[in-house]
Image 1 (cartoon, one colour):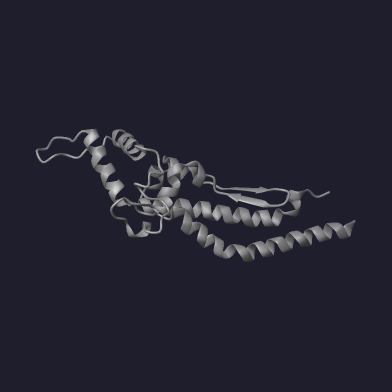
Image 2 (spheres, rainbow, N blue to C red):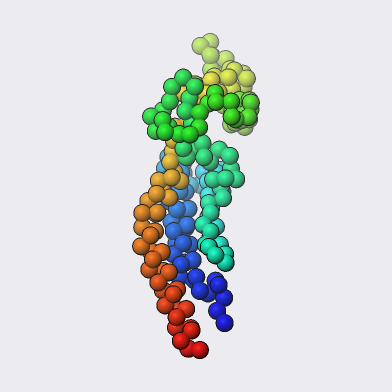
Amino acid sequence: MATLNDFMKFTKEALDDFASYVEDNSRKRFLRKYKFQKKASSKGKLYNAIDSDVKVKENSILVRFPFMKDIDYAKFVDQGVKGKTSTYSPSRTSPFKFGSKTGKKGGLTNAISKWVKAKRFQFRTEDGRFMSYQSMTYLISRKIYNKGIPAKKFFTRSFDEAYKNLPQEIVEAFALDVKERFKEFTKK
């Protein structure tokens, strides 16, 4: 006797293809937006976490992209964040905003501090001396807090693009599943 997974096999394949398309294009867009070489960015936490998951359940099929939930800043990179005083134009529609008192206090400063130290990133002053990591953290954090983070839309655009073709593919796949199930019943 056929199992539930056998019955929904064509529909699941169509949704697997949809999820893979979104996943692959999200990675490509991420690389393009950050102008990274694949070799260099493949070490990045967000790039490596881009994935999808398709599960067949008794009354539904679930398509998930867990990295958007599991990695806090994935949503901020994709949707952008409005700044406190001004905003990059692609981020104007973002639901996220600095200074809204909804995020963790000091989260931006701590993250920038870790990044500056890890990259050993320092500007030089007018007299040629290196600025301290603390000064660098302050300057970068203040700029990001006031101006915001531009939206990259690496995931949103990939999802929307794939979603346009999905309805017809699902109808055709589901029709194949029903046809296969009907053949199975008529054999008995």
